[in-house]
Length: 481
Image 1 (tube, rainbow, N blue to C red):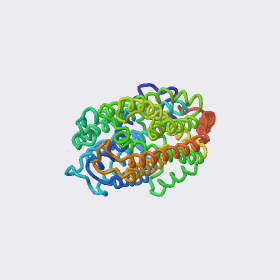
Image 2: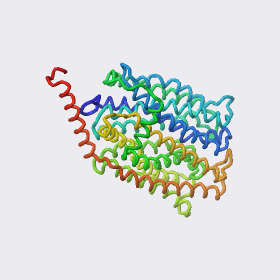
Image 3: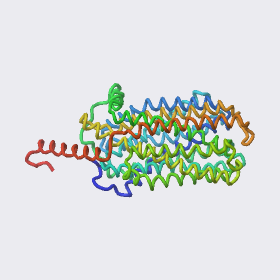
Image 4: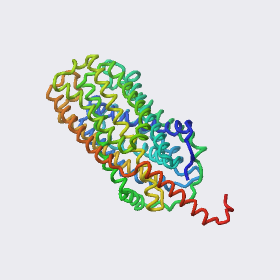
């Protein structure tokens, strides 16, 4: 039984989505700033930074099934998910501050960075996994689930873009910009406040609707059962197909985001204005996604939208690099070069976000397929499985970006415009080739996702009818209301 029957009110969509601001803050920090901060600002080897971030992601991914399992089994008068959303945000905020203010203002050891990253990611998961697991509980409607994810993704991108605006306009607006150590500590504190307030505020806004004792007490927590449910999730054919496609999509996302500051700085040679406009470009992409994704799902379905989005993203995204390498691109660093590059980024990024939101929404439909097969619902376990794939893959993408930077032999504290042509060529060719291969892989699998709108609606109707039959058998006289 869903919390909301019929259309989900706009106020609720906004409040639920607001919790994803914290995820956007984290994504912006890890994807756009952390590698360049620890490598170029603090002087830590890029390969080591990439390895620490990648390893932290893998450890986090292995813990996520426990968080999902515990969330499914939380049994309180506030329901299964809300207690997590009240407890985790404050320690998350403290860990985030530490990440951007390392003791002594110097680069930590490999294991010091690894431990801090693990702490941040685990606490973020304790907020995000229960929150995302609410989506299939809130509504069973195929389109309303997409809409809830639209608002989550818009809020997530909003949180990330807010942090980019604060970086470029407030905390790192000096001559050295993001290559200066000044400002990162204050920027970290600002991000911590956004994280804590957004998650707690979202929980408070949903409280009156979802705070209720679960209909039945779950079985007790068992370590073996936590991972057994994830193994069972991977036995669901639809989830295996989804995971195979999402794996490549998440690797591509991690690679693109983590290497973007390098290509923006050393390949496209952004000036201060270029960096300040970059968040606006990403915002246009997110807003465009918000407008077009629901019509795309209604017209083509989620699998085709996901496959088409990644093909457009990669195909358009590599064009500027190809033109630059063949010598027909405007002067690098000029206003024309930056503006033209932004036009390609808007189209490419929009396609990529359409793929991600389509894939995330597809997971919700697997919940009912699993329920029909086993008689049990396990929302958080499926989303923990999604997180397992996402974090391992994103970690691989960040690791690859660190290795690309190392292979290109970009020195610590490099000067924009002074890199050798060979370094630029190596970075561009490796990045472009990986982008195309990963896009083809993603499209191949996500396009074959086996649950269509008709399949889902038929299954929900069957499950609803079965529930009514069971209720009638339990109460043949109709005395229970």
